[in-house]
Length: 428
Image (cartoon, rainbow, N blue to C red; front, side, top):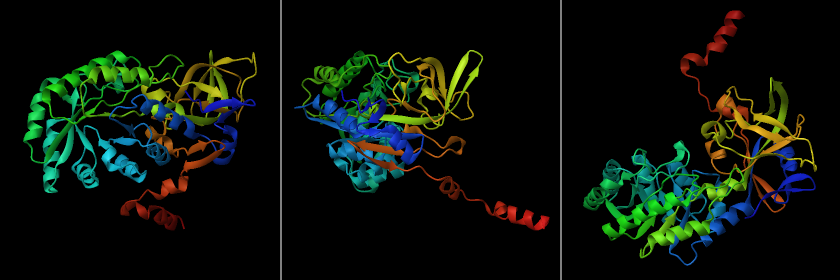
């Protein structure tokens, strides 16, 4: 696998660009993406299905930056979107509408209409109620919506509780026990064209056994139902955040081939994390260090609003000093924390790092998925800039907003608009 972030001359580089050079230009914190890793990961995944009738639809929920999506579009990727906004980004990036799949349990009528107008490839429908509404919206436009019914196979992916999606108790998909009735309903609705079957059992899956079980059930169901031209097997392939082992696309592809043997239609995949996570780092500056009893803290300017995964999921990200420690350099155990007023604002606990002075740079690795995409302006902190590197060149692909621009979005109601002026007149 390509590593886009390596030490050269004692300094961590993004491909051929020193990270301190970017920090000096755009300030910290910032996200940095490696084009080489994005492209390498796509080729690795797509190449595992060489010769098959397969479409790789990048899951924009992992990273919806336009430059990232455009990179995948240039390689021939489709898109898996879960909102009207993501669909617009996919289209703006140049992805063929006939390679766009619209997933998600809560599509609005407006989103359905926009997707029908765009003539996308497929709606992954997740409930009978959604089927009926989509049929109504399609009939109002004198068309039929291409649909794959997402089936919940009742398979536990053994991943984090908040990102497992294939158990009977999860909100996603139609229970496999009701699948036949759902297909009968779909085929009875005038606004629905039933083209496929879909499944997605979760994210950050490191064991291929749940995939094997889910795909076997879906493939058997597809054969029983008949007449389907597309099988959407979702995403979920995990990465090794902690440096351990993770399944490779070739192993995953072998599971798919075994389960879908004899299916003559198109296979659709929706990878997100696998394609982008290791292509990105979050770079932050050290503000202070402090001790509290036995604990040592490194306080940086990156925070939970910039990268919420550690706070939300207890997720592990490797954290390294941008200045490479020398051989045998002293290391101390520290918690790396941010400035947000929450005890949960922790990027990493019990990390062995070299002593870090004020202004030193750190890099939080494997942050290219669900990093910037899940960021917020909590504590009225601006979203951080995003930078893309290609070789020795880099470009800001989303600038840091100014506080003034953030304030300009706010609108006072009429009864508050003149409060300051009235008080000033009273004092005068």
